Image 1 (cartoon, rainbow, N blue to C red):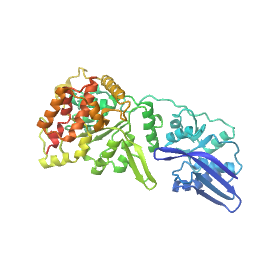
Image 2 (cartoon, rainbow, N blue to C red):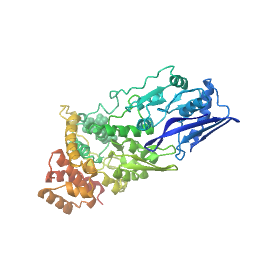
Image 3 (cartoon, rainbow, N blue to C red):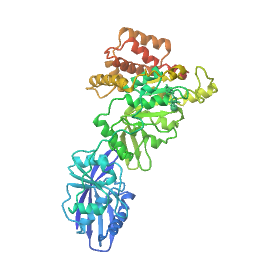
Length: 509
Ligand SMILES: Nc1ncnc2c1ncn2[C@@H]1O[C@H](COP(=O)(O)OP(=O)(O)O)[C@@H](O)[C@H]1O
Ligand SMILES: [Mg+2]
């Protein structure tokens, strides 16, 4: 008998519906899966037959053909075990009913227990869009699926439970989404804990307000990591759309926290400098979104920036501009979004004390320039703001008067500046100042006469590179927005130039 059941698949970021057809006919025993299955799907047959046997169902006797439609799309992974099993039970008359508004996803272990799968969230969204009312998933994945409204997502422990539910003998209560309180390590951090470092804090405020990438340079122990970890606490809240986008990527990568399936805080990723290209940008034998995509709508913190492999750093350049990354592989190429704020931190030289006010640097000049040279010009250019993080003076550390501003106070200014940009760019295809194109720069960065003069004098006298020009304009736009000024004034230009001056201190040839 021929039967078909609904399931889903994932290709890159996109989920699609899959129809699992089974046909059991007379003849010698045979079991075939067609419809572009990969190795994991082909092995499905063995898992399904074992699960049937171990749960005392009758095995299909004759020729069984399973087709996964659409047959022109390559099917991957183990998630079709459950729909194949249900299709076989119906084909062999062991289960009856109309399951046309239901879909099934899940891997089986040989004893018939359901094992969790990746990428449930995008598949649950697709199921709802294609009119599925009831989605049966591995129990461990159910909380993730429950994030999607308008579809019932049922947590299934094993196939006996599922079959009994489909026969109407028992009811499985659908999973309910319950937001959980923050318990992550970032949420309790606050800028008020960082003493001194006013310039670095201002730089991070500007970065948060305008979406700019930042480079922090300073000796070991000056508080670079401390500052970077607090950066997410001053970023605007995630919108619902951003939250779903980020969650989809983490779902596909299989790294969602079980207890808090919906990402509601901006991601903060800090891969170690030994990270491989595939782990950073995405890809690998079993392709997954990389760190840059996991940082989508959040922060990518690269500590000890010069220590990253050259190819890893160079591969960041295009995604930084485009906000998405294309991962090529045998099946075709996938594009994953990766719009994030990059914070780089580095020592100024191998020993860390080059330019230090009191300690001596033990590095040779060539070692220093080789170290700095690991950050290429094009990479430096993508970091709009460069700021020095000098060692904190003893007096500042000792002073515990609690006068430092809290994250909430800084965030309030950031939010205001973001609102101004949202309003200004509502008809443009950008969201913040960092994304201004040369054409839009002309339109929106109007300088006062004095600011104009200062900028042109700075270019003549300080030998700023042409490349620095756009960056200075963008950052000064943000500085003006933080003060709710429509016109960019000379103090904004002066500060923006200061945020580029390390270029000349460390990288001037
Ligand atoms: N400005 C500061 N205010 C308070 N504590 C600081 C400050 N700078 C450094 N520290 C202390 O020094 C430690 C090391 O700082 P860290 O951020 O790891 O430095 P870096 O990353 O620059 O090497 C911090 O955990 C903190 O205890
Ligand atoms: Mg550090």
